[in-house]
Length: 293
Image (cartoon, rainbow, N blue to C red; front, side, top):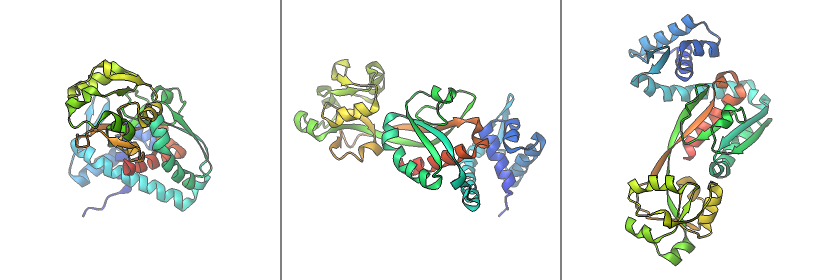
């Protein structure tokens, strides 16, 4: 087996996440020619092309995409070893703001943040429960967990996983209104609006849901409020399976129905590579979310 030079691996990772040799060279403190030679050496060792040039940017080839996830795991592991070996995780301090939806902020983040507090107890953690990606651009948050990939050029994003969800209702509601056995039965049920009835209908109609605006009698733009209304028996609502699994008074509606899938993106500023504090939290979130979801 061909031995790999870690410097070449690191050069590939920085180029893939930076989008260009110049950005990667700045992040690593190298000259652009040196970085280019390291990437070329890795391609030669592997016998594949990892990048192709599109204008002034580099895009990953299929082989590059396949390699990237493995290399990211190697990079995260190397960072953790370095932190533990030097004791720097204990020395990392300052404020770091993590933004996620109110539901994920309440249900997904707390167990992960317990581990973060153990690893870096001097960090001050601010959880920003919001869905607006602009909070990153305004520098109101350092890291965002989102279901849509941002398009702003100053942000970088990593697809962590594809989460699943279903439609749920309280047992008390189903005892009263009946448990639907097929899609057509849903026409007789009440649905909880998540702030935009028209958008929900646009999503549900292609799935075969025979419902109209008349089925939505109550709702809220807040995911936490929507979920509480569902728990209190007001009607049927969609929810991530991870959240529903921890709510015993809730039942899955049409349990044999295919799950709804949605992406989970982890987003941060391009300064990720120059801030050890952000890098530590970013990699921990990526690892823990992938395991949890």
